[in-house]
Length: 290
Ligand code: COA
Image (tube, rainbow, N blue to C red; front, side, top):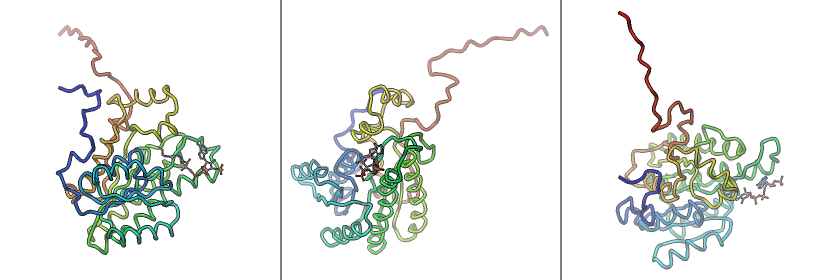
């Protein structure tokens, strides 16, 4: 049996978990899809045959994906976009429809986050994160949701975090925004269920991410503290998180809507430990005189 504390020898992309060509002919938009988790999601969809568009604020962040797509013959495009600007998002959605056709899949992955004590958080800092995560997710869902409703269906997957419901010290802005996205997803799921548009969430715990490393666990010590609190004893690989997104946006999950899938190695199950695996308790036998 494999050692559960070691990451599995995973296939090169999360795409290997679905049949070849499972996304052929689909138009997929992954916000922030050129770096980190977004890049892994984009690679997965592209490897399954989709046309993948990766909007992000900086063209440099799209370069690695577009270069890999050229080399592998994947269908891919970049677009410069700030998801906080509703008019920009509307123009982007029109461009996607005219250049590639209406979107079949939208992954709201773009995010901003940093640790900041609430009492020191400026209004701009609060707005920067709420703007990207909450406003951006709604603007994109609205514009691409309209295309999906008009074309007969589609799937939206929102990347949230388990602290959307547990809360987390130091990231009040992000936790509040992700909680809003969770409520938004369930509301849209109900509103659009009868018209073929599914809306789901993936809630990762800590996963390998340069952005998170820089902003959330900048020292080895903090990283180790977080890792040791995960029952599985490790962070998720980006491919393991991306695999859930691909599944939720594929036909394999066509009866799933309004769901949120936690992928956190057991972290959010709570850490109250009465007993450690392997620990032995000696049972004292009471003597009975009867
Ligand atoms: N701590 C405290 N405040 C911070 C901060 C930090 N680490 N980073 C940004 N802010 C504050 C800024 O000071 C500013 O507030 P002010 O005007 O009162 O000073 C406000 O947030 C906006 O910052 P700014 O950098 O001008 O905004 P932006 O829109 O260009 O970028 C982010 C905001 C969050 C997107 C940016 O910090 C970023 O790019 N982060 C890295 C990407 C990321 O977070 N990825 C997700 C990893 S989990």
